[in-house]
Length: 346
Image: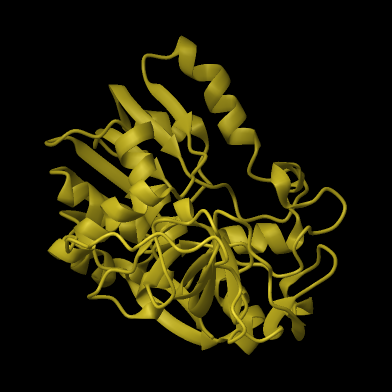
């Protein structure tokens, strides 16, 4: 990443400036609901705290987590801080890229005018607030739309491979869902860290996965990697629909399985069974079976930005939608057809 001179600390009076309007256009809902009930509304611009930044959102990412936050399913999502009975924030969305327009009194990392990317509190809006530790300078070689697709999925792939997976150079790595959001980052990151990478995807995405750098691509509609003779040191499972017993057959005796996300069903507890079973089984198995609770700290965003700057990592942006079509974007994502990521332009 290009060396960047730290900004001067803002004054204690810094905050929302008079140039920022009092209201904004946003995608919103008042209750947990299906995505087709999301509506474009006029809402107050959020106030920021001492350590927070107000971002003029240029683009916002669309990932599977948005569906969970909008619907409140599984129920664990509500207990994670999004609101038990109704959403704490009517505006969904985490991933964002844009320009800083105001900073809180304790913010030292940014000042108005900086181009940033990271996770915000309600990014499906013209303005969103974020803690300064959840943002990083936007990679210069990316558009705002490209940058907005990186934080959640990119950090999940990075932490799944580097931290949960303990990836080392020379290992054989298999990524399921390699043509999707997390998977498209994981293929590139595993290659950047010196692994031999196999990507698993549907027929329509095989060429895209090859273009991301996969050494071998398996079309899961024609071949079941869990019944063959191949064995991998690390499996990053982003597809979420294969039993643990089958995935373990594809691991080496001391291999590691990292579960990212869960099945795509709509049950109240969907996605929770496999991680719990993996946690209970792992101490008694020769293989490491673990799951991922992803976060998006500034340090990881800066690591990703370095890789993006070097050319080792490029977001696979499938298409963009205008903010007003957020429901359509989420619906398209849920079909599993996008080859890579989707973004909303604000």
